[in-house]
Length: 64
Image 1 (cartoon, rainbow, N blue to C red):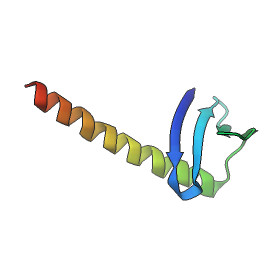
Image 2 (cartoon, rainbow, N blue to C red; image 1 turned 30 degrees about the vertical axis):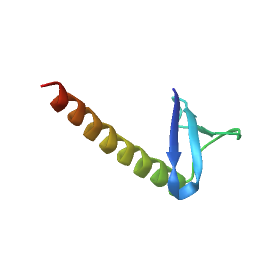
Image 3 (cartoon, one colour; image 1 turned 90 degrees about the horizontal axis):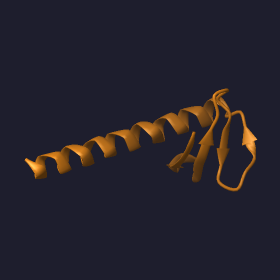
């Protein structure tokens, strides 16, 4: 699943995740993330989700 997620605690950009849970950061090879890396990725993903939800709500309200 190609994506582009900045993981601030790691100062890295996640660019791909496979079905087995391996990740690939920009400029790096595939790897299995450590527990700490998993937590950082989940934190960044949750933050991005919240920001996108806010954006969607703002745009939907502007249309109404």
